[in-house]
Amino acid sequence: MNQTEEIKFELQYSECCETYRHYSSNIKEIRTVSIAQGIIALTGSGYLLQNKSYTGAIFVVFFGILLTLTLWRIHKSYYRNAINYLNYIADNLEKQSGPWSNHKRLHAKRSEKYLSNLILKDGVFILFLISNILLAIGIYLKVKL
Image 1 (spheres, rainbow, N blue to C red):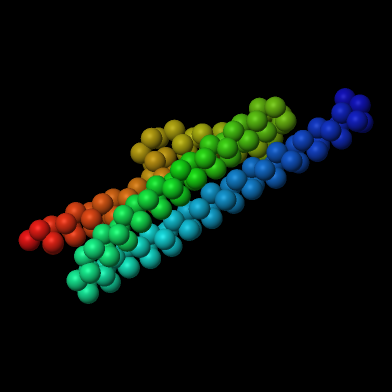
Image 2: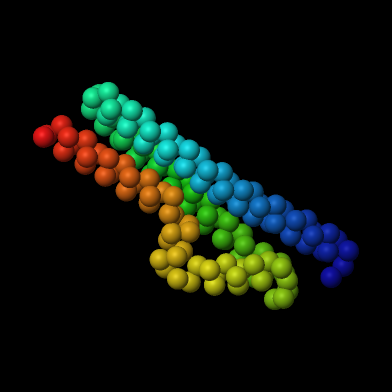
């Protein structure tokens, strides 16, 4: 490899690593925002229920479900892009024994079990969807009875 190709390779490697770190950081931020919005939506609907404002509580629950689904889609997009960059770095820009290749192997090992992968990757979103759906059913039953 001549010097120009080496510089080009180093720039590409650096850019791919930065992009992977960017996506990883955004995944963490989306999860944090999801936890905050879930707690706020559940607390707000609980407060409205306590004050017998059933219509307001249903709207908050509905908004919580929509926001959770939206954040989950964004999370899945960032996650998929991060994995694509990780695979590209490990397969094309690094030797088989490099740190990104090792990270890829460890990530694949952690992700091979479907249930634990689902809980680790999407658990926050599933938890808040279930919570909001159960709350909506509870509100409906409270109003009906």
